[in-house]
Length: 265
Image 1 (cartoon, rainbow, N blue to C red):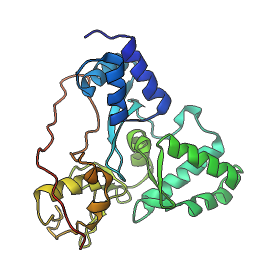
Image 2: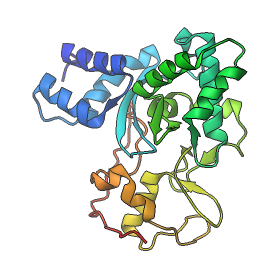
Image 3: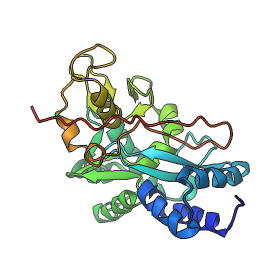
Image 4: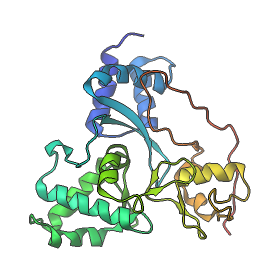
């Protein structure tokens, strides 16, 4: 299949939105191409064109919902989170402070009131009203997720800022999922060894292991939180896929096991 204006239109939408859900991407592809090829096929074709430009489109999973998004990122390692002058100095300083609050917290989130109070500690003055507007845009652009008055790491932060996190924080401060071995900020914590699992990884584990056990210490883990996990309820569970490679990519196959229901304990 040749690279057409329809591919460019798909790329343009991903660029403008910052992150496009797999459902929205699929709907757009059906309208544009009117063919039954997989979404990955078209993303792969775009990535081939993006590779010389040091860009790629990655598939990233939201830690809070398990929903997946296509995101355009640079393949050049940015250890400073400079965002290429996308934000003002005050906005960038606030962003970095909130990221730090999330990373250093026990539950991978930062209360909105605490985030707004950070304005008083900024080197460059910013009002709380301006901070509220800025954070609303950051949620809209998927840098953060806001739920129940707390900010969580958004899919764009997960996709684009891992090099910055690794350069700025110690290995002890950064958590790794005991199942997929990828960085995790918010997830299910073992009450015994305190290791953290992505909710998506834990939900997949619970489908095939009853009761599910911590992969590190073998302690039985409660499944109560799975019932509130969007991806579990929406029947879209599978293990996280981080990217579509341009060459020699290995195809993943999803586990066909049906969803196992759990009652709250």
